[in-house]
Image (cartoon, rainbow, N blue to C red):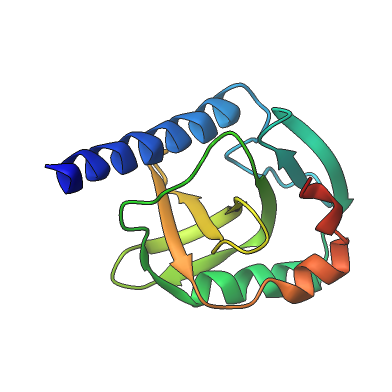
Length: 157
């Protein structure tokens, strides 16, 4: 009985997170599509504050790192325990879009979101299908080069 309730709580929290991100996309905090308007910034969204707290220019190294995250997808997040009250979400535009071809997603990603609840927690990748369905994945490529480049340690309060 306790295990069943725990699974329901995990599904509720996971659903709430996806709804939160989808609402942010719908309200324009995070555009789901990256338009070809020249360089697009990486955005850092503080979940607790409910807003973008930092932006920085994207470049080829950033694109390469994000491509490595996508190529290292391990699978869908199983019953994620994510507290949508804290953490950061990074929006990383991908221009050109990155082809993803694995058993869970086949297509191109023109933007990837990294959800990271806290420094000692495993981060997750969020991508959207062409019809707007959010997909949340675990991945194995390190975030260290990205964290060092953008100096985002200070976003965890």
